[in-house]
Image (tube, rainbow, N blue to C red):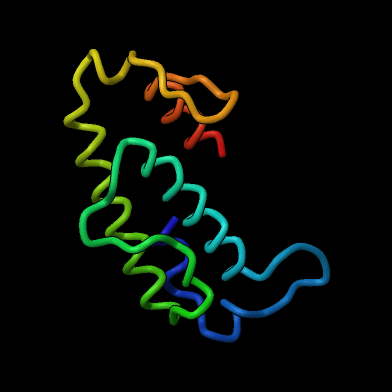
Length: 107
């Protein structure tokens, strides 16, 4: 996704289409959702939450997302079989890490 959106100009990045959201708002939504899915597995060292993405420049947001993706991939590689199958309880939701990763891809 990052490779697809990197070439957009600032005008294209912020342009409001007739229907739907600007590219920037879609990217912010994806970034926030991905952060929340990854965060289920613990704190992300050196990476602040997505709460301030609206204040980030396009380049800052893309760099933030790249760092998030690096952490996500590293964490996925280190999950043990037990960690992949141990249920995670969030409110009324009970899912395994494997299910969380699937949901993240579907989202």
